[in-house]
Length: 55
Image (cartoon, helix red, strand yellow):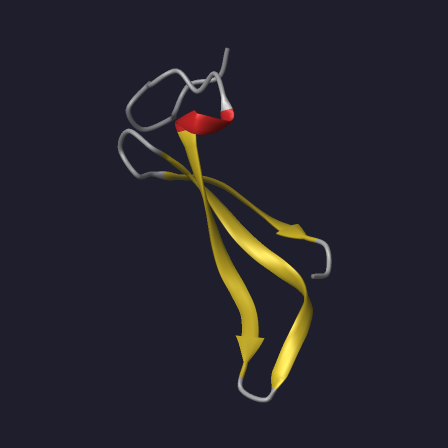
């Protein structure tokens, strides 16, 4: 089982975390990838990040 490193809440399913899309638009340019942060729904701590494929 996985637990949040901050509050020790059990993270058993997708509903236990929040995926925050950081977007990829900067001025005139759009990146081909999306950046995101995964946070604990209980305490809000950022517990991971990543890059998703193109839109």
